[in-house]
Length: 85
Image (tube, rainbow, N blue to C red; front, side, top):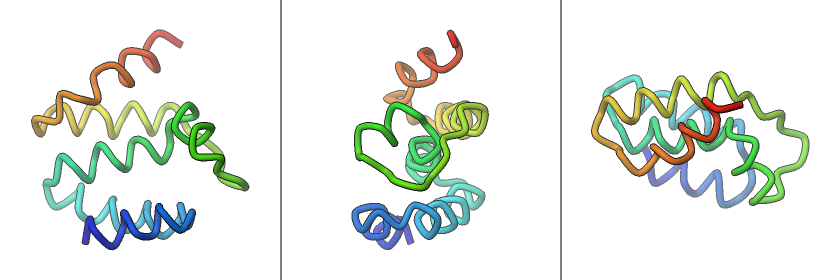
């Protein structure tokens, strides 16, 4: 499922990627929670040039925290950046 979500993200279908990542994250995947957080992170969306998708820093923080709780420490810098806002 995460692979399919990654494919959707590569195609810039952020909405589909979010749905798939959310399903996997809710099932306990830290990797999916981290990726889902990115899809709401303004810096990530700017970096990939996403069009027509609104960032949601609060949701990014929520999913980054979930990812951290599931062992995905690599999200710490993004989480810290958003929490300082």
